[in-house]
Length: 90
Length: 138
Image 1 (cartoon, rainbow over the protein chains, first blue to last red):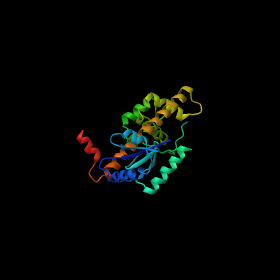
Image 2 (tube, rainbow over the protein chains, first blue to last red):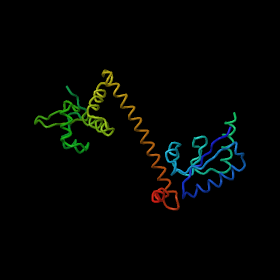
Image 3 (cartoon, helix red, strand yellow):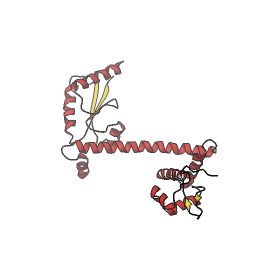
Image 4 (tube, rainbow over the protein chains, first blue to last red):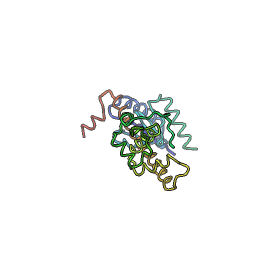
C-alpha cells in the first residue's frame, strides 16, 4: 500500500525550491508504488492548504496530515517516510 | 430589594456611555424594553447604574456582536439571571446560540489561519509578494 506525500509550496518561495530538490533526490530511491507524491501550489489550492493546517511554506503532509512545518533534513525526511511506509504495510 | 456590588456607588449615564461606548439613548432604550431592569435612581431622580448593570450591558454587547436579536438577548438574559429555573424553550435557545458561537469560532480560526499563511508567504518571499503578483496577473 502506498502513501501520499504532498509538498506545499508557493511561487517565489526560495526554501520551497530547495525542499523540492531535496524531495526529488530522496524519492528517486523509492519505487513509485510505495510513495505517490505531488506538489501543492498553495495559491491554487488555498482552501485545502488551510484545511491541512499549513501556516507557512514549505510544508510537507503525508496522507493528508501535516508532518513538517519547515524544510526537514534529508535524513529526517527519509526516517519519517520509512516509518509511514512501515505503518501502511502493517 | 436590589443589592449593588458597588456598595452605594453608582455610575451616571455619561460615565456608562464612556465605559461601554453605548449612547445614552441606547441605554434608556434598553431600560424601556427591559433588557435592563430596576436601574436605580438617585434622590434627584437621576439614573445610577451599578456593576451588575455594567456586566449586563457588556453581555448585551457581546451578544449583539454575534448578531443575536434583542428579543433573543432578552431570553438569554433570563437564562443568565436564573439558569436553574429557566423555561425549556430558553434553555433550548441557549444551546442553539452556543452551537452558533462554536461554528463562528471555527470560521474565525480558519480565516485567521488563512491570513497567517498569506502574511507568512509575503514575508518569506525574496521576490516580493507572490500573492499580489498573482492577483495582478489575473
